[in-house]
Image (cartoon, rainbow, N blue to C red; front, side, top):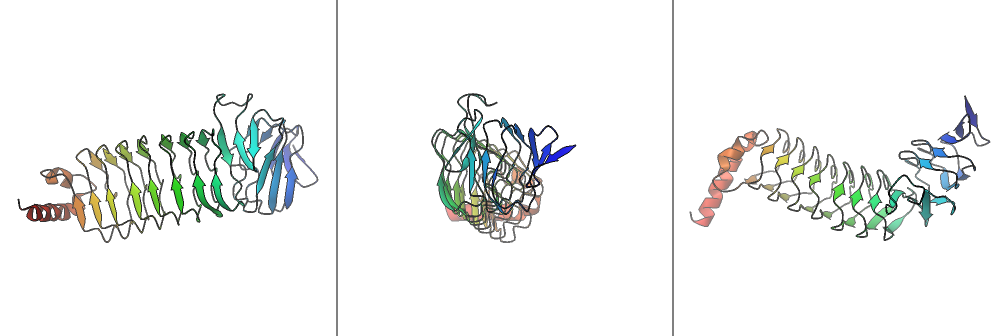
Length: 315
C-alpha cells in the first residue's frame, strides 16, 4: 500500500519514505516532517518544481533525486538536520549524523534551474555523482582545492559550461564526468589523476585542447569520442593502455604522439578519425607500435611519419 498527500506525492504506507513526486507539481514543495528517506530520482522530470524544503527528519537521500528538474532553483534544508545542509539553495551531505566521515562534505545537487557562474564553497571534499547533470544554465565553475573527487556524470550535459579549472587536489574523476559539455573549450587534467574514465569527455564537441599529466596510466572507453575540435593529442609517458573508441570519430584530429610506455592500444581506439595523417612514436619502435591492435590499420602512416622525421632531422 502507498499513501498520497494532497499534491498527489506518493509515500510509503508508513509515510516515512517519499517515493515519487508527480511530474505536474508546480511551485515550491515542503517535504512533510517525519519523512526519513527520499527515494532514488523521486522528483525526476518535475519541470514545474521551483523549490524544495527538506526537514530535519530526513536521514537518507537516494540517487539523483532531482534529475531533470529544469526550473528548480533552490533546495533548502532545515538547520536542525544532522545529515544534510544547504548553502544558497545548493544541497550538501555532511554532519554529525551523516553516514560519511566527519570531515567529508559532499556537494549532492546543484539545482538545474540556476543560472551563471558558481563557486563551490571551500571545505567541500567531493562533487557527487550527477551533482550538476543537465545544469544547462551553468557557465563556469570554480572548484576549491579541498575537493579530491569528481563523481560519475557530475557535469554531464552542462551545455553552456565553457571553462573549468580542476585543482591539483583532485585525484579521481568519474566516468562520464564531462560527457556532452558541448561548449567546453579546454581542460587541464590535474597531476595525480591515474585514469581517464569511460566517456569522461565524450561529445565535448568544441574541446580544442587537453593537457594530460604524466600520472595517467590508462585512457578509458570512449573517453574523447566525438571531440570534433580536437586537432592534436600528446599522450604522456606513463600511459600504458588506450581502450576501444577512446578517440573514435574525432573528426578533425590530425596528429597523435604516443610514448614509449604504451603497452596496448585496443582495436577501435582511433577509428573514423578521418583527418588523421600523422602518428608519432618513439624512434626505432615503429614496428612494435604497428603490431598493436589499434594501430595495425595505421602502420603505413606510422612508417611514413617516422621516415619524414628522419629526413627532417638529417639522419
